[in-house]
Length: 48
Image 1 (tube, rainbow, N blue to C red):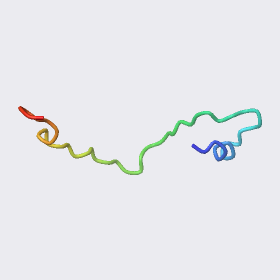
Image 2 (image 1 turned 30 degrees about the horizontal axis):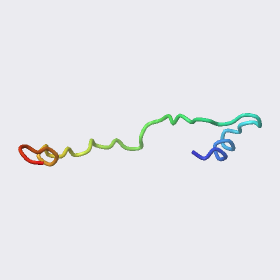
Image 3 (image 1 turned 135 degrees about the horizontal axis):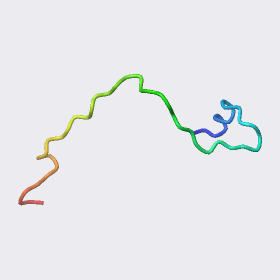
């Protein structure tokens, strides 16, 4: 994150430093789980 931008937005006084931010909230939209690959695409039997 941009330390200077965070310092300005949060009005952090001199002598203090922003070392971490924790985002809170929820996503704008719920995404669906990724499509699963067929097992044959990444497994092999009897060959390399």
